[in-house]
Each structure stands twice: as structure tokens, then as C-alpha cells.
Image 1 (spheres, rainbow, N blue to C red):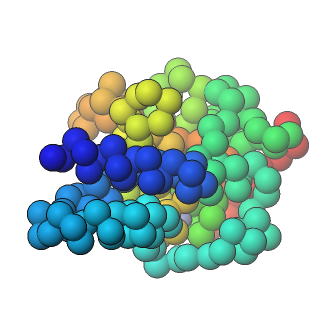
Image 2: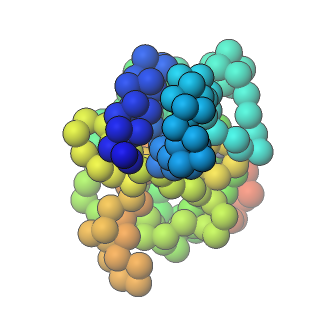
Length: 203
Ligand SMILES: [Zn+2]
């Protein structure tokens, strides 16, 4: 029966702004179906669409508010799950300078300023994207990304939900994880100055 529910949820979510189904949503629909098949059949039509929208985060802004706050490239990555080009870290005529950033400091979410990564965990993965082997505790959240016929671990800001990148399992010790992050999704605060830097520049 679970397969039926998954298909129903997926079909119901497809037209909803292109957002993909999240595991929690499927589980929620599953739980409803266990309680009552008839109720689930009715609720899935409305409920699945509702729970597949924006998830709850401490910082929640409307699309217009995000567009006003972010550059076009930042919006595309953070709010629309776009991916910048590797090595140039460019998108929409903007470029992030953070790939080669090597000073001690904190990498923040470009959407809300939340601290995500520390310089001590940054390394050169040779992929062309800023890479880290661990996040700051409480910095990020993850979910399963099934787009493009792949199953990947999506990583986002725990404070505003802004998309950062993906986590892979080919990273260095001690975690073995590679957090592959869009430079455009972050800013950088050097310990030496405490001033926010690393905003997009012209590509
Ligand atoms: Zn954020």
C-alpha cells in the first residue's frame, strides 16, 4: 500500500511549483492512510499539497520579500535550488569569491546570516565548489532530493531553509562527508574583522 501512497503524493506535488516530495510528507500521508483509507483518500487531495509546500523555519519570508533581499543569483540558488557553475562559481552574471577564501572565519547563509560552516572544516575537493567536511552544530538541515533521477542528500540553512547544496560520502576524515556548497548561497565573516564579506561580484 505504501507504493500507492507515494505515487499519489508525487503526482499531487508535481504541479506545485516544481517542488519535490519530502520524506516527511510521505510519512504523514502514510500515517493518515493507516488510520482510515477513506479519510486518507480525501485528505491526500488537499493535505499532500499543503504539507508539500514551504516547511517551517524560524525565518519565513514571502517570495517577494526574498527577491527584494537577495540578488538574482542568490535567489536562484537559495530559494529555487539552482546550482552555480563550478570553478567560476557564477550564475546570472554574478560570481562568488568564496571558493579560494582561506582565512579563518565563519561561512554564513546569504539569505539570513545564520552561521553554517567554519573555515577549519573547509578543504579543496577539486570539484570547483566550496567544500566542507562538517557543518557548525545547528547550522544546517538535510532532506532527500530525488530530482534529476538521482537520490541525493540536499543541505539547507537550518534557520531559513535556503538551499545550500548537497552532501556526499566521498569527503575526507574525520567525517568522510563532503558538503558541496554553492558559494553564492553564502557570505563569509573573517574572525579578524567580524565584518561580513563574500557577497557576489560581477561575473
Ligand atoms: Zn538562512
